[in-house]
Length: 166
Image 1 (cartoon, rainbow, N blue to C red):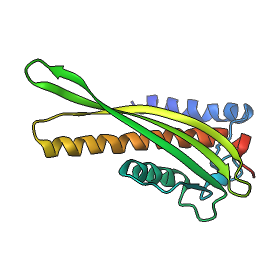
Image 2 (image 1 turned 60 degrees about the horizontal axis):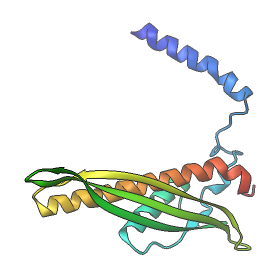
Image 3 (image 1 turned 90 degrees about the horizontal axis):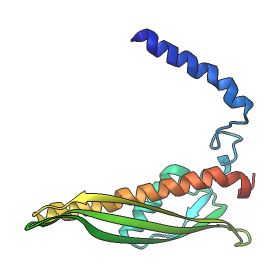
C-alpha cells in the first residue's frame, strides 16, 4: 500500500511542471487575478436570516471588507416544497431551492463590473416533532446559503482577471 501512495505522489509531482507550462496560476495567491478581492468586496447589508448566512459565508471566502473597492448587491429567492410523500403518512422530505442574482459594482463610479446568478437546492427530513423539523429546515436553508455563496465566490475568483483592477 505504501508503494501505491508513493507512485501517486510521484505522478502528482511530475504533473506540476505541466500545469505551470499551461499557464496555471492560483487566482487567490499573491499576484493572482483574484488576490485583490481579499477584503475588497462589501456585500449589501442582510435583512433576514438567509441574507445573514449568505454574507457570512462570502466574508469567510473573501475576508471582512477593510478597504472595500467593490460592492456586491444580491437578491435571494428561496422556495420550499415537499418532495417525498408516503401514503397515509404525508410528506417525509422537504426541499429548499435557492436562486441568487448578484451584481458587483465599483465603488468609485458605481459602474457594474460583473453580474450573474447562482442556483442550488438542499433538503431535509420531515418528522412528527415540530421543533426538530423546524431546526432541520433552518439548517437546510443555512446550508443552501453557503452553497450559493460558494458558487458566487467561485465565479468571482474565476472571472476576476476580466473585471478586477490590480
